[in-house]
Length: 290
Image (cartoon, rainbow, N blue to C red; front, side, top):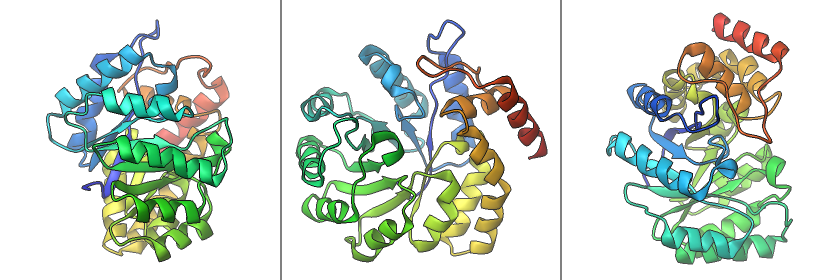
């Protein structure tokens, strides 16, 4: 699997009527590629996949694949809390031009570790592509333990990585220590990117790189070369703005920055709402400082 380095979890830009702004999406795709990111992640949390229709998801996927035109790999988000539905979505998805599937841990149901294992077992057996597990307990209320991660990594060759946004460095170190050599740990938390890289993560699926892809590419490449002084310098430079973009939910914060920089408009779909005036001003100040 080619997914080492900087992966951008790309937003879905909207027009004022909340229809998809394909002109802005094309602009963002080219901005990312021209800034030397390593791969794109489409229809993840940052892409507001949960408020897109099935038809919109198909259209966006086809659009991104066509515009990327094999210049970099693409990861497609296909996940949910109904195992049978996720399996069906994978079986019938047009996966031409897709490198891997990112699948979030089942949310709301609060399954046991055995339930999580069986969920991903079904997905792995159905998927013709590598699977990236996505552990984000802050959104799912369901942590994928280190033991379950390692069990899945050993039992299924196409479960190739985990995007970890648990914030639990001890759990991550257990994965690094005992994982199969080809299995990858990917940071899912921009604020903890440097610490995760220092213990063996092989890159990031990032929100902030929507706006600052070149800088994050430099940071990740430095960390992969064990140039931790440079990597730490970049992490600290972006610390305040990373915290700020999540203050009132994601991707509302990053969409403000992209509006300030002129790439897309600051529109989200309900139940998300645009950020407050105070946070907008704060983000504008931080952008100007950077």
